[in-house]
Length: 171
Image (cartoon, rainbow, N blue to C red; front, side, top):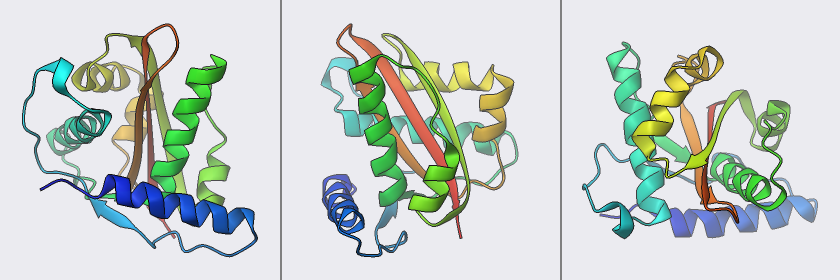
């Protein structure tokens, strides 16, 4: 069964439109389950959704290997912000972290952490390996505070893969 990412993204767009129009939004309006496993496919046959699901499965495997609980849910607000940030990096070329206070405030979270990666031909397992080798990123991926996620994988005009993971704890 496929998770409702397209539906959740539509709901996120509606929530974002409501925020822009001054309508308060509920950050826990839409969540969906992180898959427990993924079907292995040829890399060329994987959609962005497949890649993002695989990335979360890899993150959860690292968390379990380090004695932590899995992250069970994607959060529509957090996911939308990850998608927007990945698109911004791809469009502008500016590879920088967003102020996590924005993720906290806009999505009604009490904690947020972000991991970014950019490179040619990166796979989800390579992204996680790079993050685990970076003390700051490792701390975020393996934070016991993390309970929900937003994930984006995109490409820039040079064909480089950009990965954005926002891990959050809802208020």
